[in-house]
Length: 447
Image 1 (spheres, rainbow, N blue to C red):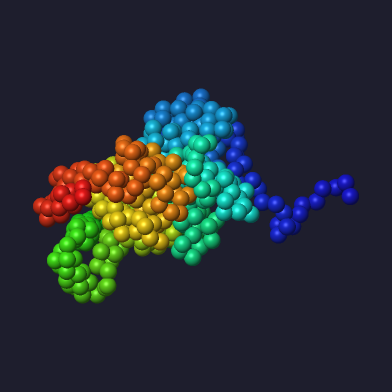
Image 2 (cartoon, rainbow, N blue to C red; image 1 turned 90 degrees about the horizontal axis):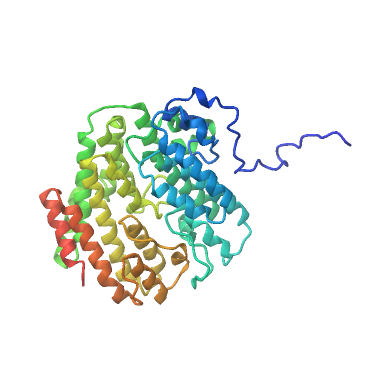
């Protein structure tokens, strides 16, 4: 009876998902490149949920590793404090855009969120700890102690596509973490792409984001022009749809959609063009403009509520478009246009749904658009509201630099000004037809 025996796998407890593997067995003195350091830290997990963190001095031999060294030191300090860990992780990532810090910290945050979801699996819908989850998986900031919002899960909207919340939250978190490897054309994606080949990631490997990551690591340099032309065409069509406010414009858009759909043999020409753009750009993903274009196309597909990796909706879509600007001037122009489209669609949806059952999902889209267009900060408790309370409008107003509104009509003016600024920014350097439609959106933005 005193001899310990291993339990069968079916009844044994799983390993702690956040038990950080030891970094002591790694010969850090032999690691001299950033890519090798990333490989050592993340191991065989492309999401890097359990990073093997070295001491900062162990990274002294890594070329161009200053940012990584500083981040490891700050992360160790944040771990010791614990109380403000989500806020500290957000600050670390936000202060190092386009660096390896982005995917490493997203993976770390995903690991923390995984444990919290497990802890909350039997919690009721009004459990206050649900408010702790959103700052780990999104840019929504932690909630202060004096919140007046309902105690509800701000990310509950992820369930709407037929997935239970833990499954949907994990899928959204996985995509968000994996997309972190595409935050810049300068990131070493080889270790993540190699780790994706492992058997545990068979399903993940088939997703568009993972395929783009693998194609980027493969370094193909096929001709990207056809794929980029599909992306430009889809962008122009989406602009026509978004700018069609009047009956004559909506009629013209309906005619265009039918004609374009007939030519492609589909009902939704924008979705078809975006999908085709991705397939044509993947073989050229070794080129920055091709990989960046594929990232924009995949993200634009999610804006249309369609993707190969549900839940398609989320609070990272417009932020991803903002990050895509790092892939070159051509891609930056397309990304800015899609940001303006997303904001215009979100404003229109709230205009229609602010006092209806559509309010909740309209709020998600509006917050997503604001987070990705330099508004904010926005606290996680905003999405706990299910009805258009005055606190909703005042929080949104504060994110726009105007905390006074307590009705939709009052918020509409600063929100319209924000939309006008984004549309005019996108119009700079855009092709003439696209610039005309963006300028039309800007002119009509403020009621």
